[in-house]
Length: 239
Ligand SMILES: Nc1cc(-c2cccs2)n[nH]1
Image 1: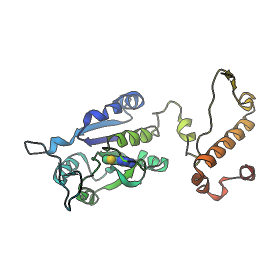
Image 2: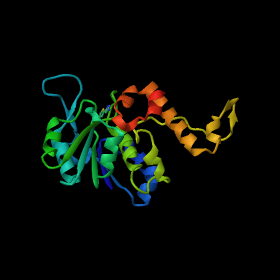
Image 3: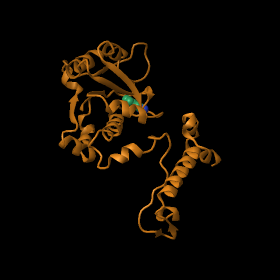
Image 4: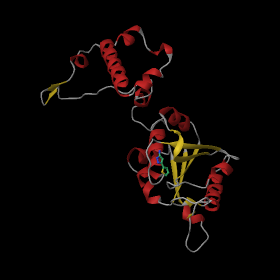
């Protein structure tokens, strides 16, 4: 997979070259390009934004600069991702969709946004997703890009040490992850649940699912309601 990021703060994307993602890049599983939007400005002040038509607070990012940048970085096979609080929710399912793409380009805007015509124009040539990573407002899209790239990259074959992790992580079966434990057996008078030391994997799997269901029901009941009809057996419903 090829990932390109266009931003006015390239240094914000340095973590893309560290740790898990750094290894994936070193092993050629992902290639990453970070581009400074100001490289496409032509005025002495390297202006990237301007006052909003219709008035209002803040500044809006200029269409000409973004248009030239995306003309350079994108092709018609690109999937363009624009983080924005006004986007559709970024979920594990969306991460799985993006993980199948050959080329992702991320456009990092500032809070007041990018002139809408940039998305409208790009949509004529490529698929464009305006995505929200949550109902809160950041200052810029860079942090959102780090979130999306990490959630997507970990799904790529070979990136995670243990492929079972991605298949069994939270949301893969529509439920939240239950509690995890490791040594010692008792820590500050808190024991590990006996079932996990029983060696009875049928019971262990049942206990883990019960814990996941209970936690999901307590913390995110809407996820339980969204489960497909046949997802819960009679034991689950008795919980
Ligand atoms: N979910 C979300 C995205 C954002 C921003 C993207 C770009 C500027 S602010 N805030 N919250």
